[in-house]
Structure formats: structure tokens, C-alpha cells
Image 1 (cartoon, rainbow, N blue to C red):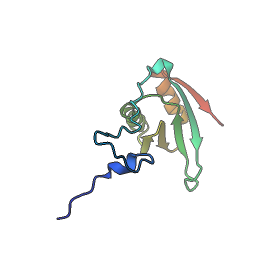
Image 2 (image 1 turned 90 degrees about the horizontal axis):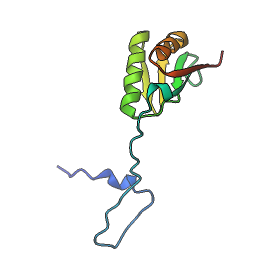
Image 3 (image 1 turned 135 degrees about the vertical axis):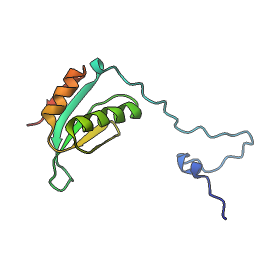
Length: 118
């Protein structure tokens, strides 16, 4: 069997070669964002159907915090609405138009939420 190559070189941001014997690459290691408490979150809830084949989705943006906390909130919203969705890159996407139900839950949970658009 062939050895699996280390894909660490893809993370090196233009560094090609170093002649230093004691060189250790330290990439852009961003510390995980600390999750703000719900009362300090400024969430925006909107209806979106761009590049989705005309299908409507409810988009929750503005979450500041770790990916785990974002996914946990996304999971809770999906369960409350009884539909599928996705949570990544600071956005929660819920399939269908559930703006009012999501707004009610977020406000009850202590989040500062604002409905954007019609």
C-alpha cells in the first residue's frame, strides 16, 4: 500500500521552502470565537430564495460564536419547525418560510432578533 501524503502543505499560505533546520510552520491558527450570551446576539431573520430553484428558506444570520453553538441552535430551530436545514459559517438555513415561528422562539430564548424584509 502506498503511504498517504500529509495534506498539511495546503495550509501554508504561499510558503514554499525553508532551509532552517528548526523551522516549524505556524499557520493562521485563529482561536475559536467565544460565543456571546443570547442577550448580546444581534440575529437577523429573513426569507431567501436566491440560487435555490425558487424554493424558500428562512435564513438566520449574525450569530457570533463557536461552530458547535451555532449547530446546536440550528438543530433546535430545525426541531421546533419540524423541517431540515443547515448551520455553517455564521448562518442558519431552515427549509421553508418559518420566520414568525423562529422569531417567537429566539425572543423567548432571550436573543435580540429582527425580521428583515417583507
